Image (cartoon, rainbow, N blue to C red; front, side, top):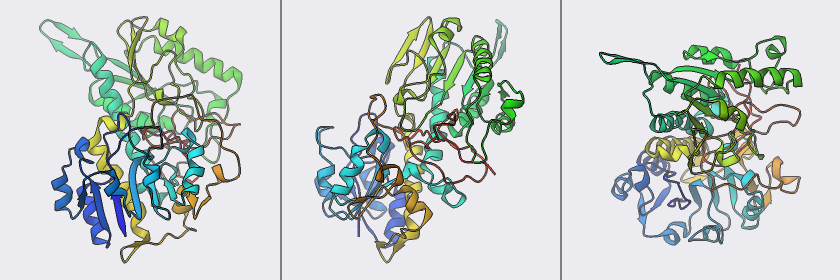
Length: 440
């Protein structure tokens, strides 16, 4: 079987779906691997590096896709009118497509895969269970996105992060608030602490308090009796009473006045991201403060955030960088490529892929099979309208949050513990937006 690794063509995307290491492993499993020329350059991987690992280099996209039985990508293929090339038209009927497909951002595309007789797997739908952890693209990409978000804030911030005592005087440490303690949020806490900031964090799930404190952060929440019961047996955040919500908003509004850096991470699958920082809050913040909105591609957590831009409002910089994992492409590509290898290896036999369609990982990620839509979120209902228009997706995905439950502060599962498999996608940048499974 031929595995194809095309060049990513969406704006802001610098990642690639295979590394020389994974190419070598696929070759060892009996596959032929074809990589489009230049596919890895954005991630500092040359054609010669792929050739040394055993891959064949194809001169263009057509030669890469031609006869490919399996296509591995980072983001979904371009359709007609989306860019310079109609990649959907190049997919062979009967082939397998594995990528971060962001189906909530383009529900009609799911039927298009079925019509094209392509078996499509959305990696951001990977069940969050123990044996799937090394294939979990949400965790691998969100971890790096959280790290990068702090660096973006540091770049825009006009002061140093750590306290510095000099002969000319003392520089006070920066104060950072991380809104959401999922995978990206926890990494943001750790990174800001390493840079010397005084860090606090907030999340709607009581279980995250210990995780935040273990990283040296201060947990910010109204910790009354209602808060202690704010998580369902499945690990989801319960909807809080209006009284509690009012108390929490007041606490955050007071806390944010003292912050130099704020990083927001809240996402809801298939819907616009919730507003966490209002215009009124912005007016009270310090001059020169910086906010990084990691949810900007889904509508944003900050009033006034603009996708792809850094804007200033009331003296506060609002950073709306797109596709944060792609802004650290070498590591994000290496981890993503390993996620794909881990997912596919159990089904590789004598140079062929033979999926066990009853396997939990396969059932969780498969969108289409044999010309039919098989994922339960798309098979039994007409596609819901896409969220507010945003630039092309860039990071993996989100979990489906029951309507009666409040969204977790971040579309990701907690970084620790075994996680249950009720998780679906957000799919835009690989940064992730999954409601957490239960940490056990």
